[in-house]
Image (tube, rainbow over all chains, first blue to last red; front, side, top):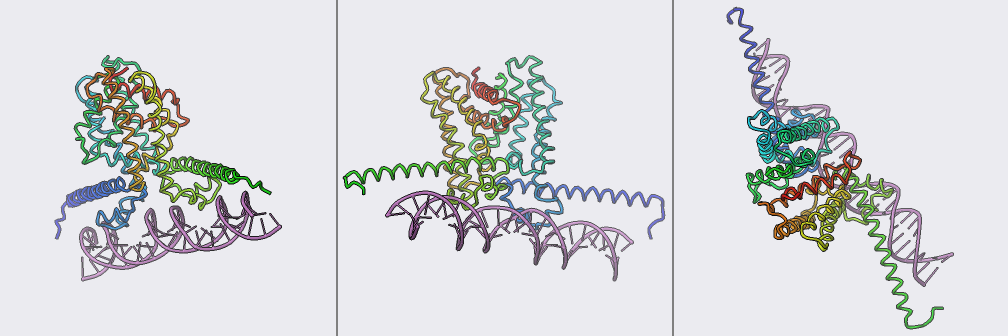
Length: 215
Length: 215
DNA sequence: CCGCAAATATACTGTCTAGTATGTAAAAAT
DNA sequence: ATTTTTACATACTAGACAGTATATTTGCGG
């Protein structure tokens, strides 16, 4: 019944290819959905206080379902932590190629990271709190990402120094404290708090720049 | 055999009084010892990851011993958290009565608090991380202490503004970010890290003052 | 030296939860 | 239409740990 032409195989394999893509997309979507709910749960109850059954209930699925998408509870945690740090890092990557002078790049970067931290603040709170519950390997991998983040901030500051926008002594040491201010956002800003997210972003950018004597 | 004089009762009751004091001192000492070891354990393993049996072993005692000095595991945690915040608060109290102008008082206060945070940094890390594991009542009581702390810092900054040492706009909003920098000490400074505690203290004080445009 | 009380230990229980072995229904392939 | 695979659920296990009931030691008053 099927035409016995040469390209029949190609058509078939192409269809399979598309199907595979669809499937892997679905899997990624499911993983992301689980992670989003898990981060909300871990944020509320803490890692150990959150049971996988509770997570399954919130997703209207069952426990073994979770185990088909994640190796174990720790795997879920490490995925959350990694995502939080990776998003922050990605924000710095985008701005790096921006036009503008080094000071403008520093300010834009800080602003963007602050926004991302507010957006994903559950992920980052969980990371800060539950770091110690990570496997040694996961912890190290994520720590390397964090160091990469710190290094990028330090380089932005160094560029400002080289270009003469920042003349204060001790400026390079201050980049570590900028990370502290950015992290503090997760305490200052709570969804539904009195301070609007825009105001918090403005304040933290101002604060960071003042650390190196700008503004 | 005992002289039948009037003051026999007084002597006896005085002795008993002293004995009671001794005993309550011993109890306080034992509680403090438990808390010190518990904070070290919670710091290393996390609250849920730390078992009371492990704590008992580290103290070379047994589990029921702990229960004679604390109501339950949560009681130990809340005592640790309260201690950490109370010490920081006490540091601010000492300096408040210092001589010197308002700017000198602000700097001295920041320096003292920074020192205390380094000294008790295990207590404070545990507090930050495990806050959510506290009973609602304990959490609120300790949060009130925290707010008192924030308020005192804010007042020190306000005094500097009134006296004209700080003229930067937005200075009052910055006191909240000072708390962030002070908290970040617990991440920057780890015992046995490369940075000496004196250097960290100097840096954080400098950073805090720069937030309000001083230095 | 005796008896009582305070302090601490031994040994146990009940519960909770991460992880799994097995079952089932629907879709895909043949 | 039949088999195979995928995708999930049901139902269970094993172990850990907070908290406790009971036993034992120690020290002290008389």
